[in-house]
Length: 423
Image (tube, rainbow, N blue to C red; front, side, top):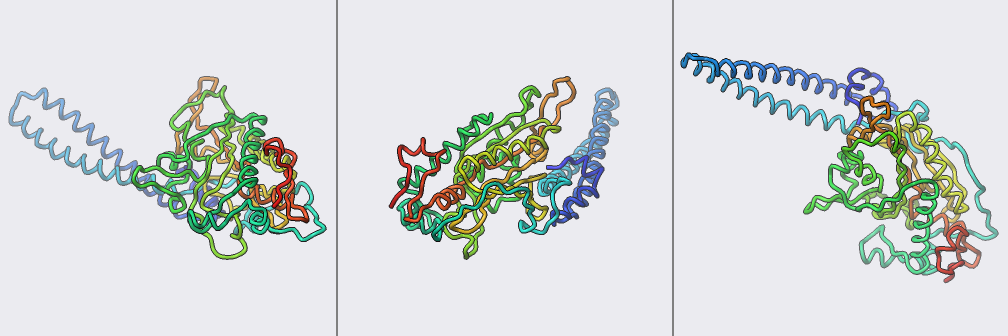
């Protein structure tokens, strides 16, 4: 959520940012209108309450019963008016909060202008695309042939866009998760294993609600929401708290299954296990000082790159354009790995500097060491990495002419002696 004072004082700056995002700048005018109405109502209510307090004291001192009764009657009428104004104020404040919660984060000046993800800019490419002396297969052919991906059973259990990983495939997925977590621990992150269901207010704090309600799974009976990413609980654990400056930066990592209603259409883009309603992901998350968030973004990108490099995957770093930038993000880099069988770059991580956008919604501040007033922290998040796309890239990169898949060296200690997956 943006600072209301900032919107009030710099409305054209916020509008310019919204226009870059192809969002509706009139939301700024609505915020200003509601804010003015709110402040007018507050002044009116406070003035009338002050009048009621003053007259109440006069009534207590009055010895004239007729005068006292007249003032009591007048205060009764005034009380009814105050109640009406209080109700109006609650409605205006609710409307203001709703509009404020739908305004996306401002855009960093470095973010390239664009209409969509097609305008994202390649920052660097690391590693060469693997060359084969045979036609590499896509994972949707490799997996079933090796008996490690079972599409039929996934559909039988849950419907379209679900699948089972079996045998060495399930173990390879687990090895990737364990290895990623261990790598992030070596990079200085602290592991959190959190619930995979959270309260509504936690999703609001993280910026998922109300904007993305249609993409979330909700248990209406218990009012739990399934997490779309570990970023949500990692934001929520410090909601409403004040962190000592000496504790910053806080570097957290967490594995969760993630649940999202994917809006998918037919075609090559959704073949195999690339997109689904349930997937695994290892998350990186940072709380830091505002003046450190730009540097921490570079560090988190480097940590995600180390994950790709450690698996021996060719990858590239992309600067997201304004047409692709996420609702909460101030600036984002995507990491994409090359999947030779599918013949495409697959996004496995989006690393974002969110600034104080989530901290304002979640009311997360830090206490400066010099004793000055508390300030909002900055938060950053990034996948390190997302599955199953990383699994896809490993299977397709390490496939052999006979249809087998060699296990990357980094994962062999976690595979229980399996060095090659064979049919």
